[in-house]
Image 1 (cartoon, rainbow, N blue to C red):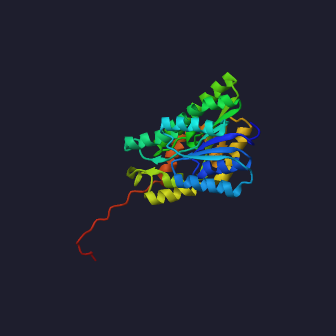
Image 2: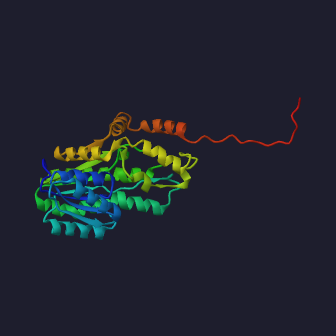
Image 3: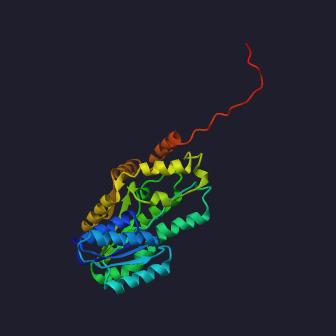
Length: 296
């Protein structure tokens, strides 16, 4: 797919971050849009930005949607095809983050992150795939993470979902190549992108004193790692689609961690443990009170 002009793209997580940036970039190229997010206010803001900053006459529809709801996703896909006449691209971009130890993580939190990060991608892929095939020229773009290539402590739920998206999408791409059906797939692995994911993430209390000093400090430190803006990320993703890439890395941090995992496929874990110990909160030395008078 060399041009997006006149095509129709469905984007989840379109209320902010990379989803919003993708919507704006595609609209500037004359691509019609079906946008979805759980955040209705953010969706309206994205719609306003498209209308005020895009000269191309594109059709934009919006849907307040929970991607973990399979029936809602299937209904939205059918609605997109009916309202736009066809669907050429789906960007399964919605995602959340969770910090917790494996031992201490609550099952409800695990179900929450798996429902959005993994099942949301599965629902979007399966719901839209028949319409992409019917268009004769389609593309599935699934957002994993650099942590779908490289694991870290305290993020087991996030790592698990992003590794799952990677495996799911790579298998999908191979099947589509075998079918020669006019549809392709790309897996996206962003590094630190300046989005709202940090503010919407969940940080379990068991992380305090183990890997972080406090939740507030952890969020501040996390945001310092966001070195790539969402507009640049969207540009890289769309270039990847044009070149029909199987994997798209975003940011120099993503390239570095990918290289580290390739060169040290298991040994990198020891390096992460070493670095985590150096950065983790140090136990305080207890202070003992005494009533003894000082001796001269």
